[in-house]
Image (cartoon, rainbow, N blue to C red):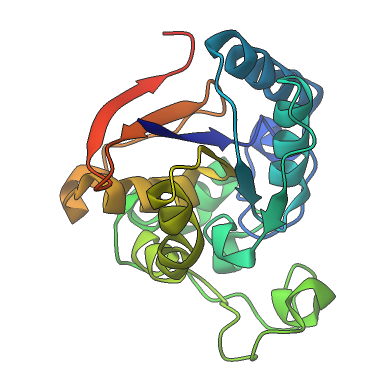
Length: 230
């Protein structure tokens, strides 16, 4: 059985401050760093050996991936970074305090933006300080591809090609895969893997810790799903 381990990045500084983060490149908090280290220790205890790892282009996921591999004694494993594994883009909500956003727009509206499958939050202006349009890590992308806001539906649409081109084929080849990513990019892929409905995925939460494991047969049917340490 091949294994796919999803590790949502450890707590970030903006998670701690209760801010909408999205594509803003925020660092891990002290707690988040320890969560990533502990994830690596759990992987080692479970005896899971990886052949390849994937992560986003955001430092909180990259650091989580590096620490998890380091503390599982697998820092040598090749890592590929892709914007397609980035967190959902929160648009104009990026950088806002979640409580302040609720006071400004209303609890119900903010809840819809956060939890609906296909409702978009307000767009981020292209000249915003957090805009990806002026970030050179996305300079290879056509400007029309770079989002100004995303919902989970759009997040899945841009993450799915990476599953089809990279993650899925690695698993079919019999490789164990590590993916260090974000709450919503992981949720999007979990929706695809498990064939969940739009309504069902709304009830799925991915914690910062511990890592989530899927085991597959040779046809990529899920045979087992569990969190490490359970």
